[in-house]
Image (cartoon, rainbow, N blue to C red; front, side):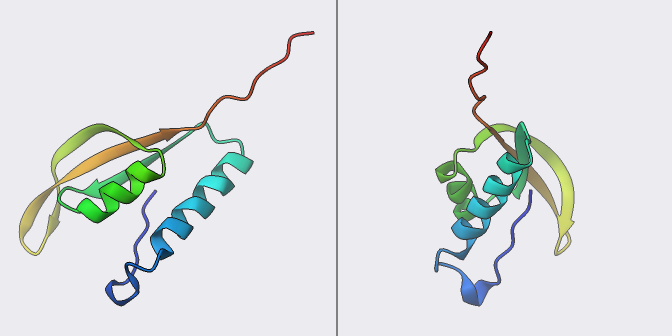
Length: 88
């Protein structure tokens, strides 16, 4: 999952609302897990994902390039809670 909010619209709760909607849609569709990739150093996005329940699962080293710089990408994962299965 990747979510981008244009700079002039940040710090208004838009990113949180987008992530909440995406997570709700994923759960409704029956997904088991969602993985998000975040450019290392994007602390606001990392914080937002942690608040949504994501956990760190690793870092891909130097897999991206932006402004002539190699970038690491942090992997974060959310696993939806399993619903109780009643046995008859």
